[in-house]
Image (cartoon, rainbow, N blue to C red):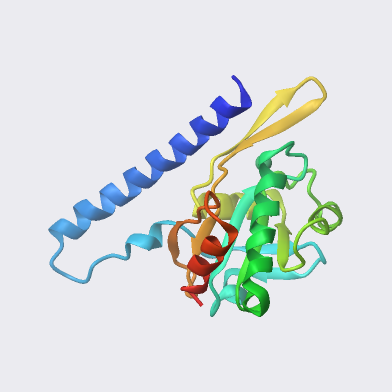
Length: 197
Ligand SMILES: [Cu+2]
């Protein structure tokens, strides 16, 4: 499969997952006269990881600010660096408001992406970006919470990772808002993010 086809497949799988979970929520909401379940509760949730400086970061530390989160791995040839570059541009366009948001890169490859490896990698991007890793179980927890698709693909010299390539926009309370589109001008993307401050 070509890399492009693979990415399409991953996006399709993600969207199908979204449709399935929102579909279920709609069904439940349609039936129950009581308080509506939060449609956004399906994506996101508690986690405890370690950043590139060895500091513990949990979902509770993120409360009070909107955040962008992207899942990937440092050996990724193109999608991850491109996305992190584009997110960096948005953070730069935010100016001082960049201090009022969080931007996270979470590895789906904790085996290779140690805090030291992440520190080296993330230093190429906007300094507001934080890179998170953890033991495999902790990373699995966050992968599951965000319904991320991540799979090891063997290669001649080791392996690569297929993964969901969506930037998640989460609100101040850690609730999923929408996939954050980078297919627009940097200023338009920054203005969109500013709405959630
Ligand atoms: Cu990637």
